Image (cartoon, rainbow, N blue to C red):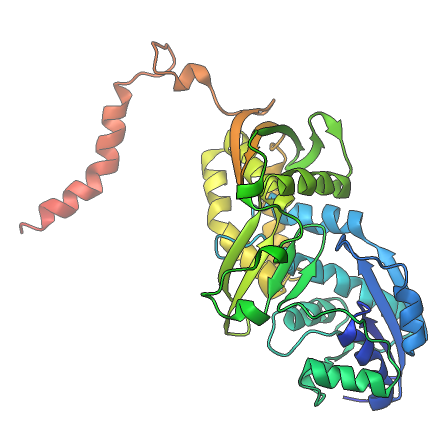
Length: 400
C-alpha cells in the first residue's frame, strides 16, 4: 500500500482519536481531515471541531445526521424485525455504514485518498467500517492504527498525548467502555469482561432500573405507516424526534436493558450490556402490527429470514447485494403494515393491549367460537387426514 497523502478520520474527540490524528501525521506525513457524526449519542460536540484543528487536522467536519440515521438505516432494519442472536437490536452495528458512507463522500469532496478509524483489531467495528467503505469506494485506502502502532494501553496513549501537547480530559476512567447513538447505548470491557459480574447501577444512563420505575402504568399508542412508526398518541413526529420521545418514555419505565454474551464476527465471544429503550417498544409494536396485517406465509418467511438479515447487519454487510435483496422483500411486505398499537409500559415490561389496522387480516366473523356461517367445522376432518397421510404411511411402513 502506498503512503496516503490525505486521510479522513472518524473522530470523536476522545483520547484514542486525538492521538490518532498526531500519529497519522507523524507516521505518514499526511494531511488529516476529521469527521464527527452526531447520531444522537448525547455528547456535547460544540468544541470538537476546534479540538480537531488544534490537534493538527487541516479540516474538520461535524454533522448532525440524526434524521438520516433513523430514516435510512434504523427504520429499514426495524421493518425487518432484526434481532441478532434473538436478543440484540443492533444499535452499534447499524450506525457504522452511515459513518463509512459519509467518510467516503468527504474523502471525494476533499481529495483524500484514504480513511481511518479507531476500531481495534479485536472488534466487529473494524469489519463494519471497512466492508462498507470498500463497497462504496473499491480503491480507497484504509488505515487502522490499532492494527499498526505499538501503543498497547491507555497509559501509553496518555503518555503519547502529553509528549505531543494533546489535551487529555481530566476525568476518572470508568471501568467499562461505552458507545452511543439515538437507538442505543452499549457498554463492554473492564469489569464486564467477567460474565459473572453484574453491571453496576451507575453504568446505566438512559433507563431507570425496573425496580425504581413508576408504580403506575404508562399507556401510549404508536401509529405505523408502511412499517414505520410515524406518530405517538396521535402526534406526528419526524423519525429522529419519534425515537427520541420513545427513548424518554420507555427509559423512564425501566425498559430496554439487555445483558448478553454474543458471538463476534471475528471469532470470539464477548459480553455486552445494552440500553435500547425506545427501540424495544418499537420492536414489540412493529411485530404486533405485522401479526395483524401480514399474510401467514409471508410473515413466516420474514421470521425465517430475519436471523439472516440480522447477521448481515451485525457482520457489516449493509451495502451488500444480499442485504439489499432481503430489504426489497421486507419493504414489499411492509406496504400493508399500517395502523395503531396500544401499549402499556410498566417496570421494564412492554405489554400490547390493543391493535387495529385498515389492512387487518383478522376476521372476528371467522375466528369466533360462537356460531358462524363462514366456516364449516366438518371441513377440518379432511384437512387433518390429508396432512396426516405421510405420517400414517411412515408408521405403517415400520411393520414391514
